[in-house]
View 1 (cartoon, helix red, strand yellow):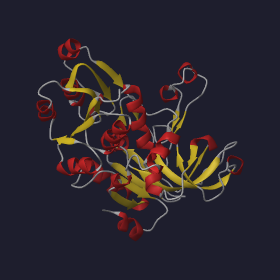
View 2 (spheres, rainbow, N blue to C red):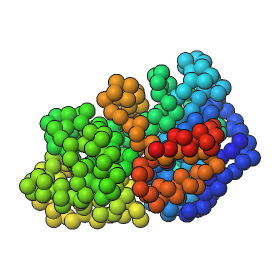
View 3 (cartoon, helix red, strand yellow):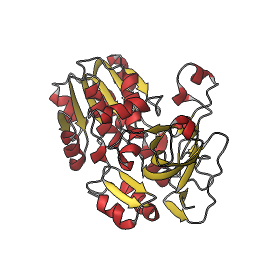
Amino acid sequence: MRAVKIHGARDVRLHARLPEPVLGPGEVLVRVRAVGVCGSDLHYYLEGGIGQAQIEAPLTPGHELSGEVAGGTGEPYGLADGTLVAVDPAQPCGRCEQCAAGHPNLCPYVCFLGSPGVDGGLCDLISVPPGNLFPVPEGFDAALTALLEPLGVAVHAVDITNLRPGSGVAVLGGGPIGLMLAQVAKVAGAAHVRLIEPNAWRREAALSLGADWVHADYREALDATSGRGEDCVLEATNSSEGPEHAAQLARVGGKVTLVGIPEGDSFTMTAGNARRKGLTVRFSRRMGHVYPRAIALVAEGRVNIKPIASNAYPLERSGEAFEAGARLEEGYLKAVIYPSERVDACRDRSV
């Protein structure tokens, strides 16, 4: 079996002769079809870790993935061989205080694919519990199915923001999560969504995917509100300044939800501004059980996430995929890696 592993900062290697996974009790074998390169994967690639989660042994990344059932105990769950499924990367313990309270995304004992100590899906085959597999409707392809994971992150972030219908929303960051947040906020009842992003092609993508206004920086967006700010600000950047910009853009009494992971694992926020405004600040971590809702949003045409898969690569060119994301080359939104497809087939998918 083949798998890609990150050995350290900017050190990605293809391992071509690894043993196939051994199925545990009740597990299902999945042949991986597509893997999205997430911003957190890029942190592992560029920095060798995220905060306390440091790569100490070669790690197979990949938690945004789709695949086909290829054996095991899928039949009792309606998962016949060949079924295209989205894979939930989180396996919470189900027993701790957080799980019992209905917050499995905060489980301190979670087994999360593609995080240090737990190999992910950037490989040919993976074994997972059947409860982590979600079959998708006819018409979903492998890339679209892999993108359901970041869509779930956006759904969860909007959930915890408690967005009221008719609210004005600003989204800081026009990467994949920001583009999804903007769409989910509209579905949740936002009166309008303005997206702030310095890169022109991402602003164009935001407009094509339903944002009402786009701005190159937060000051421009704040001026557009005549200084009032927006009711809710969803921050989805990798900048240490993102949270401060979000707090500046929020109105008095507004809400700020921090979704992004800052470079260097730290950020600053002016206390006086946030305190005087009486802001409600929430941190969003991964997601709860939202896959069925994410699937429904796509199936019903209420969100359009397929164009976000902008770059395509076969498994053997995974290093190029990570570098494209690290450089943020023009036109890049998200790289998708296809372990089971030929080089030419993957190249044809690039836009």
